[in-house]
Length: 292
Image (tube, rainbow, N blue to C red; front, side, top):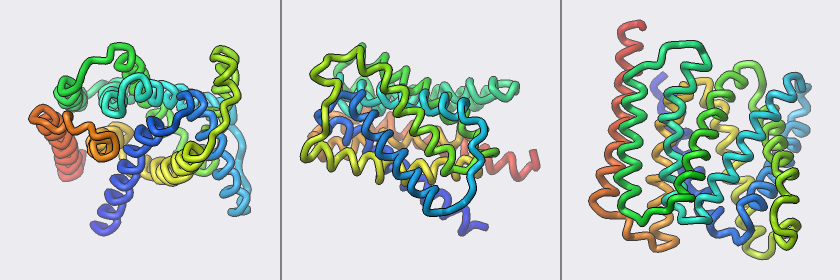
């Protein structure tokens, strides 16, 4: 039992490290945020379709429209996420999207018609405090912050919706349809961007980065993510994923030389995020012990 739980946590944090790499890849790719999402979702959805065909298992393709809708939310979330990084830097994008935990603490109980737990909201606020301290270690970027906050809100809706869908549908089915939805939502947006960017094709390093982004940082972690939702609550998942900016900022420091982030405020902010994870883990253990 303990071994199984340990392996679940190893998978969870491996997924978080890969997710932390996504903002860095999005920054390295020279294409627009919309193009990045377009190619990422196209390649990843094709990969999941191949996995389904290799498994040779019959899939129930019911609930197609609701799942496509959740995929569209994912696509817009990605556009905001990469847009925030391109407008400012990797750190701002990662920090603002981490408000997902706070949004989830409100959206999840409302979607289940349950009372919002004060403890969960307080932990979400603790995470935001940590994000704020990290943020004030870098210059302000108003538009990037607003877009990043929208990405966090959409991410919360996506995770809460998937926590319900995974109970009725396979992870392969959900990933294939949702990533198709993320791809399709990009198409009607294309005419509203500059014609020169509309048909931008990935070249050289951009192509390599996109393949890594789509396969290693999308197909692999999203398979793990949907299966872990069977073992962790959406709020617990999002609190753990708040380590993503810590991992991501450390990697950005190495790649982009953002060493100005690693000061006292950064360490205090990161410490508050880790504290929220420990507090929530203790709460879950106490709840199980009391049989609640």
